[in-house]
Length: 255
Image (cartoon, rainbow, N blue to C red; front, side, top):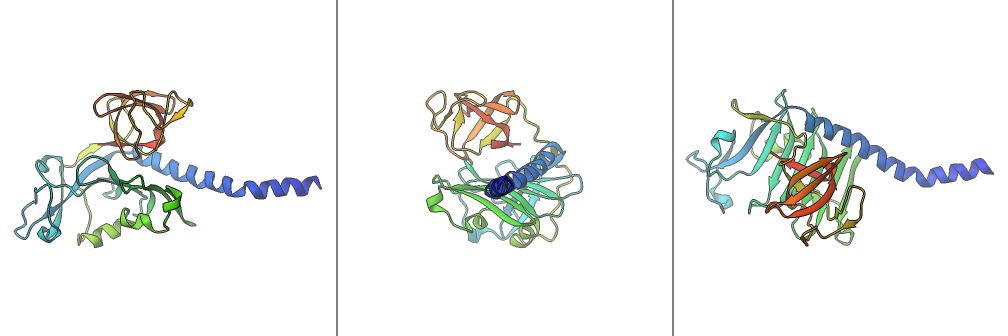
């Protein structure tokens, strides 16, 4: 009888154990990508004359083709999104803001084969989600749950780097010759995106939706890292107002 009870308890716990397992495995991959040297490149639109479009609010019919540029080429340029290439010229990370240049639109991580392994998306009306992908399929955490839709992420995340090539009619994605090298090891002063709807008063402290200065915490909001401590970071607003603490895995550093 005791064995039956133990087996029943294990059965009840198995979904939770599985969830923790795939998250841990994928988080290990994410951490490895963020520690490796990456080269920054930007996808920009071109008009019918092959010139870069620098209008802040462009019409879709203005776009004729696309080009990948480096840091030294993007002054006054309309950047569609930022790509981060590894030393083998493989895209490992893609970051996109909304057109106003502020809040997060999406972040995606890819393995060395170009397959999506993790993504964060933000619709901007408190609707957002996180996607974990492994060989068993997609594991989606969509918020709020009452707005949950099975395929919401497809409007925000490319399922592979091949999809990027197809979407933008680029024969081969590769970094520019003079691309700037970086990595995403957290440092005080780094710009970041908050991928959470709450903050903590202290590491492992009280959870709250209001920052220290009364700031309402929003998923996808830009922040600045002001301190680092044991897997946590203290963040401020972009105006340097203190907000609170958050686990490092719940922010995305932007470079």
